Length: 332
Image 1 (cartoon, helix red, strand yellow):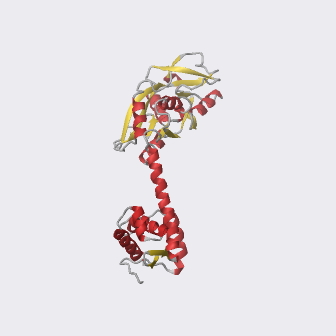
Image 2 (cartoon, helix red, strand yellow):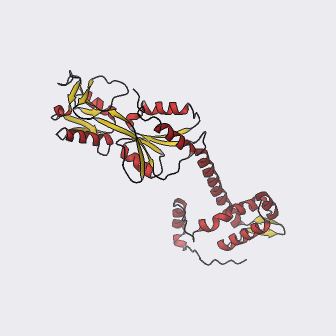
Image 3 (cartoon, helix red, strand yellow):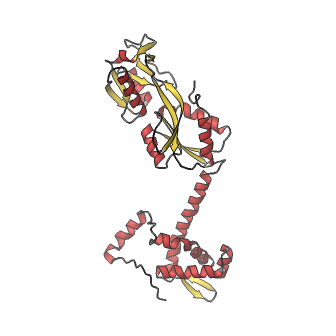
């Protein structure tokens, strides 16, 4: 049997190995002329007939008309330009090319089956998954308490948890890797929906032998000459620190930058500077935490999600739960 295909694909002998290696790692093209777009609708038919080696029996099992199945197989062979089956009356058998093709088709169909089951499982109202991001400072106490309270009514819902700084989580929201995130400051962007949930007072943290350590309250301007330890640029708390210091009339002299609030407390305890930080989950020895007066030294905590992004039932339930915690998101 000789087959022709209107859009031929040919490989030179010298390029064959390299092209095969590239094809194995590259994502499938989904243009109208691509093999995947052309052949996908007929692959399940091919695998069904290959399994039974009988067109009539395969049509019955797959609940499609035999004529539809036969036409699909003929068209598949025509498109490939290769005989996949040898015909023996009402039965068929795979040719060597058919056996080679079947091995890859079964792997591909198995991947599709697993992918379908995975996304269906993630969307299940009772046992689906929520991809949830939050700030590092909320990981030790706030988020575990929230999830525990939510799972009292949704005990089988699963969570994929991501701790990061605010801008990185917003990027992951936009990339579709997160469903929701708790962040600060509350973002204001046209492609996002954000809701303020709570606020957290920031304290000036000083070493316990510092000149201000005997005080309970302090104006931030009194620390204008101090060395500050802060989070790195890009972190929401760093931006808040810079803004509050500017409001107090000075630019902080940054001695150390880090990625995690408790590391900064350790640097303060070592006498390496002072810091503006939210309250710790557990009191840290070696430091004194002072209330800042004269300005509103707080950070707002909000929940954000991608505008127009449809929610699965478990995501919708957790979003409703978070919105219901306005004003009482953070532990006392």
